[in-house]
Amino acid sequence: QVQLVESGGGLVQPGGSLRLSCEASGSIPYINEMGWYRQAPGKERELVADITSGARNYADSVKGRFTISRDNAKNTLYLQMNSLKPEDTAVYYCKIRGRYYRQLESEYWGQGTQVTVSS
Image (cartoon, rainbow, N blue to C red):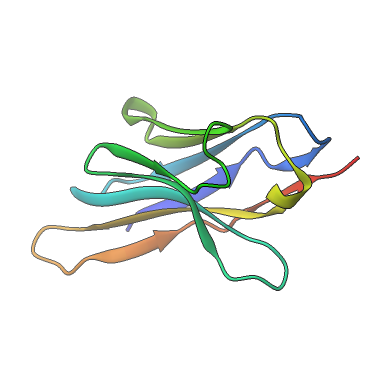
């Protein structure tokens, strides 16, 4: 089964930038979604950005500031985050939704990486 490992989180000042990486060990033949989600304390997990059927989708709160991309050769998903705000503080998770041959679709999550935006 595929395993996802995030990295790149940390503490950054408002207005700063971070790039998150999500490296996948193994591969899934049929991928329906690759995305980044986040969960702030006391809040539900929410979609930040994802790639589905080749299209990139962004939450309204991050449009124009965050960019999702993937490097197939490295089996890695990225999230470039610019102009960070304190309200972006959360644990960020990457997710792949897909399936293996003749199996049902499943979701695979990384362990999360903390992003803290504070002066």
